[in-house]
Length: 456
Ligand code: FCB
Image 1 (cartoon, rainbow, N blue to C red):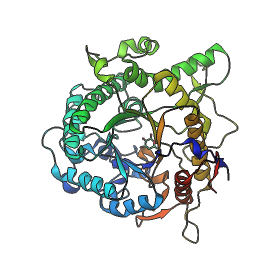
Image 2 (cartoon, protein in one colour; image 1 turned 135 degrees about the vertical axis):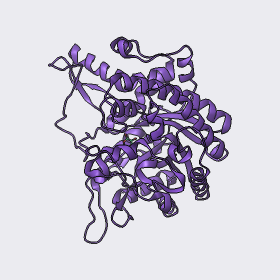
Image 3 (cartoon, helix red, strand yellow; image 1 turned 135 degrees about the horizontal axis):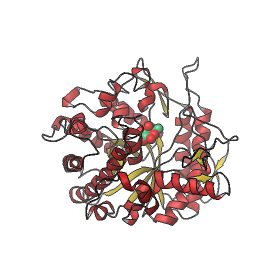
Image 4 (cartoon, rainbow, N blue to C red; image 1 turned 30 degrees about the vertical axis):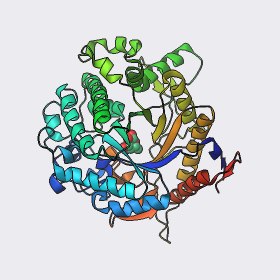
């Protein structure tokens, strides 16, 4: 077992686990919840593997007290979950559904009673279907609809929630959902993707102001999926390809949030298909935030393409891959965090998701051993420690995910949990990585002045 430099983490470092509403809650038609784009997408043949959907998922909606007990056993400080917009405003706009808010009210109270801080994501992809029918995220009016929803949530939970995340991974919503068609709502237009990105960013800026008003004293930020992009070689073409991928995935979101401007090289690229950017939009988007949330799983190696495209991903020969096919590159997280601190100087950073899927199975004794996931977490947490030691203001780390869950277009096939879920019975079985993470958290808390802690 490797030694982790846990002493790099400050004593008040936040250890957590992350989830999202549609992936775990189930109870899809209960207590007045409306239809979301993911319900519709799952019901569309051929969109989600095996025809899976979130109707039952992990049944977190009913089993959350049991899951909070698991969180206590794990010893986490914080739990990241998202609020489902269709529970709160089932019609997308219009009447607020109190029974939907009641659920999150109970969840927040129970977490606090268990000594676990709620980190609440306001949007983790479950747009109400009526909003999509009225034009969806490519329509500017969706910004106003989102703002109304945020007012309802922050008005109800703002007195107890101390950390808010406006959006989760706007790049994925924009491009995977609106240009590649692999996620709900399944559109295939680059112009829709760019309009979605702009409206998500604008609604982020507006939501920040509402949270500050209705949840005074809390901290608010946004979570982006960010990867450190490595150029495969020294040739100019490879560097240019890496710059392009970085612009596409990272800078298009980071620059407006932290610098109040879209990156010029990409603006030129997309000039013909950009949405209307009204006066004042960029000022709204660039509201100061308290922290940047970073989701990171892998880091691409990029080269110039030979067939005229902008870039191609080079498969590394010498690294492990997870069940998603994603390359395990821990130093990519370190390099990313260093780069973010250098180029954007956020006040604070949280790793809001990091983890790995593996094809877990239960052994004859009923247990689930997952040495690969343990090694993955150790590698990435070690890399985060190196970044902290170099001065990056990293304040917390959230493992994705507490539970195996509905992995979007992959359905229930891909298991990311620290806790195995037997979908036939909904039984929860903590995996080896659950105990490993528990021991690591405990070791970090117990540490004295030694430089290096063995957590074996
Ligand atoms: C991220 C999502 C999260 C989960 C992980 C594996 O892109 O935010 O919901 O699906 O990937």
